Image (tube, rainbow, N blue to C red):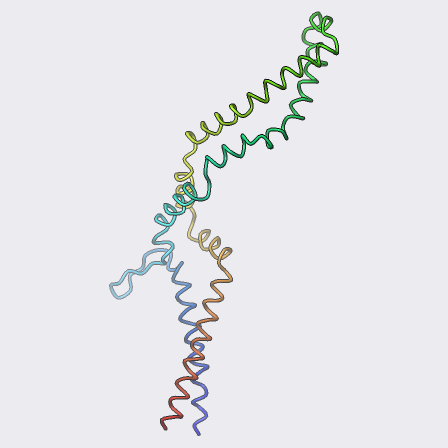
Amino acid sequence: MNYWLFLIPLISAFIGWFTNWIAIKMLFHPREPKKILGITFQGIFPKRQKVFAEKLGRLVSEELVSFDDISHKITDPKNIDQMIPFVEDHIDNFLKVKLKEAMPMVSMFIGEKTITQLKGIFMEELRTLFPMMMEKYATGLRDQLDLEHIVVEKVSRFSSDKLEKILHQIMSKEFVFVEVIGGVLGFIIGLIQVAITLATS
């Protein structure tokens, strides 16, 4: 029996792992276009970074971040209720302290009962005003912020090193899995080759 045959699975495993490792490297390298034998080579992500940025910007603006969701969230009565105690304390301090300091004569004619009544009127008005104010703010924010353009600009300006680092942070496990699966498949193919060789010899 030719025991060298049993090296075939190991060699095939190495080739499977190595080709997948090279394929992953070619996602990012070479960073700049390079001509080899008249053929121009460049890593997929550096070559298509602008297209990647545009698609990511469209995805963020259309699918991930919705100004309608933001508007709904900030005008939600539950969220507004969380702000009310802070506003109430501020108004209370204004009527009892700041008003006396700014207009001592007026404050002489305003008692605790009047302050309580004024605070109640202010709070009732603010409860009505807050949702409208927040909705108007969200509408203005939508007009001022072009999320798609912001994402496209940011991602397009990433250096190739930074883009590679970010994608490795996100997909490092997946890259390792691809390399390992290449080795495993290579090993299995090698075993099949050995089995066929032994069967036909």
